[in-house]
Image: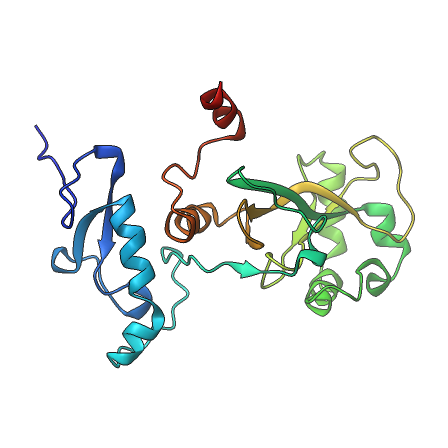
Length: 237
């Protein structure tokens, strides 16, 4: 039988409430070795994270590590002005997470008929990145995949930061409603999504669900960040 885990601070021992805390955060070079780990309940974990801010570690002369590791978790996300969201009230509490369609879709005729810089809005933070990547696409790949009835999007390109600039997908000649699109305006669809914290204007890409869950637990003390809106409604009945 597995040994019961309890919170190092308050002694709480509910299995679903116990989390592993890094004494020295991984962003500051902390490791996953046992001497750097301690079990905390979600409440104590949230309290500790609020006390031990980046300023705290900087005062100890511990430098933040520069890392691109896929396993690192970042709780800060990207804060965007309300005017750049779907509307000024988006997202709306108490839903923990709201999903926004955040993927541009181009049809093959659009891609062939128009210069790439006419298809990508200049206002996007990384419009130049998308334009350069679209211009580098091998047209033979699109042709081969189109003729072979390749499932899904034929080609997709991603910006450096998909939190603030939507990626682009090239599909066959029709959109999701079966309409042939030949204009120079890409359509925003849900093939890629941006995730909004339900309590503040912080966003993550759909690839960063673990980071958003950590943000909800630590910043907003949400014990069950993956609970759905439907489950919230059921609990209120």
